[in-house]
Image (cartoon, rainbow, N blue to C red; front, side, top):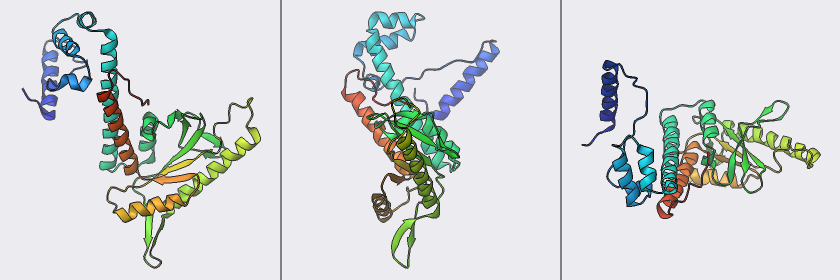
Amino acid sequence: MTLKSEDLYMLKSHIAQALSVSEQDDDGQYLVLRTDGFGAQLDASDDAVGAIGSALENRRFAAQLAHQVSPETLAKAFSAAVRIGELRAAVTELQEHLAEGRNREDVYQDWCERHSWAFGNAYVARDDQRVIGIGDHVDLLMKSTASGLRDVYELKRPDKDVILYDDTHQNWYWSSHTAKAIGQCHRYLDTLHRAAEFGLQPARPDIVAYHPRAVVIIGRSHTWEETQLRALHGLNSRMHGITVMTYDQLLSQCHALLSHVTAIDENAEGQPSQLTA
């Protein structure tokens, strides 16, 4: 039997109706498995796949699985599969935000806070610290994996221009929205630098950044031509300590990270995912 997405929703509705008639609670979880290539998806042994199939019809599900297959093997297989599923869901969520024209900054700040892996393995996780000075609240402080120090991420609306073309002088330049964000980050970096200069001591654990970098995420680039991408790269290369990227570049980075983790899971036996939220 082949079920499409709409068929699954209809099936769920009929299950809820049947449970309602029988006066049973319809709250719960449902598990759907693809039988074709199931073993390859979980990177588990044939014994594990067979155990799952037979245990689905047995009330003592956990006991039968533990009896037939090593719990460690199952834990690693399911952990990797679930983690990759979470990453895919996160990428899909970001795609939907952009495709449906959601332009509020708080939408993307919430997404980034929940999915700090999107910024790469160079960072451990986001920091709850945001206030860096009087009147200065950064969007995100990301903790470096190597040094433990923090970098600044500033999120702007995806519907704003990133760069513009000057027909008179025949060159690309930062839009006013991007220029303002760069100036904002410049102030943040100065504030953090002063804090480190006057307070960088072992007894001062409140120092969270030292010579940090700043990244501005603004606008879209999915319709750009190669000349625009090269122009953005060129403008970025002339700046020190601040980088500008688009939301589509962030999305592409997510796709690349997801592909990398999926490849690791497929090629390494029982290796856990390298990315953490």
